[in-house]
Image 1 (tube, helix red, strand yellow):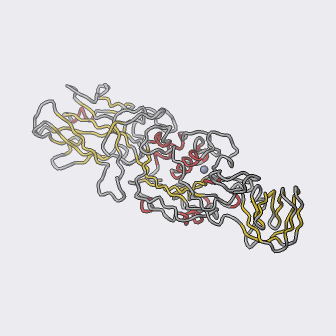
Image 2: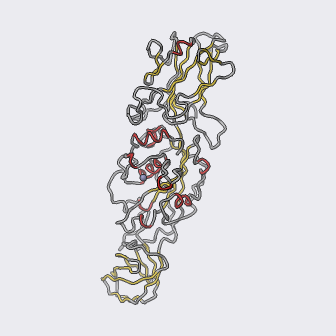
Image 3: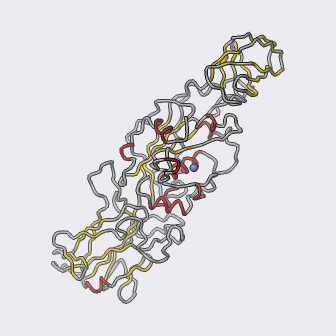
Length: 470
Ligand SMILES: [Zn+2]
């Protein structure tokens, strides 16, 4: 990515100077994109004039004391070395502790500069012909001042020292998006264990048995099919089911088989019971990918890319056939060992821990554990989860967050009963990716529990900018 103007992102980045993406273009990229060629041009084409260079870590332009606790001072970058590094190339040297490179026949002197890779780190280079003058330069906010305390311009005529524009690091986040395949076997089979005579318009509790474990009240508002007839389920226990019989009188004999569906319907396309009786556990329906509208590709607009406030841009450039090869109605637990086996088609695995190429994995999924899937609707509804919160090793976690599961079934309008404007899929997706960047619920804002803003708090922004890799 070529150096380009640094875009303003309110409220922490006023958009001054230039930006650089020093990360790799592709995994294992042989090119080092941290390298910048700094060019100083004399006012006359004279060769072999030593031009002296110094590099600086300018102040972070953010005024927020959590993001920039150093006030107006420089040396607040998160990368190492904080001010980047000048390279002594062939023909260059050091005099009075200051690096110089000689001008060529066009009066141009060139030096190589290496930036850090932390987003929001910012730099400037000062250049002049007098090592004492260059040695007297100081940082003042995002300005450089000369030995007399005057601000040094970026475009010079007769000044003794000149400087480069501010150069700010941005990073790309390569997001791989997959989803589960078509729903299968999202129901329970069993038998009615005693003969029951049912009259029309009454409720009955049937004793039942199944080889599968039946969670209490999971099937409320669901559908049971017995002898090709549909009944609405009022409630259930591990070995009974209470149903309405709105139709004619009927006898159900002992050992009659049943098929029982809960109210799962991720896209709300089935009729509400007692409607057309189409609740079917979403059989044969493909689970879609997560809503990434707050992680818009190549966006610098914080309303479309919540990471723009931390100098990070999402991209979607993995070769990936959008795998969707399996379905699992419920996860089996909260731990990385429960969740990572579901990352079956994780093509970006090789860059999971790369500092120079940031990647995360998003998997459109169905429901979290049986006790957190909103069936019955009185229980928890976990809307998304990460394999691990990056940097958080509590509970025996390795702290190496890699991917997030987004649970489509509990994110549909009929299941979300909280009217908060932040309680929806796009905010959940952004929140979970925030965890992969070491965001914690105590950060508040978009990372809060519940989510209380579309934006990352200053605490989370600081974490993102200091993290080696998500
Ligand atoms: Zn969370």
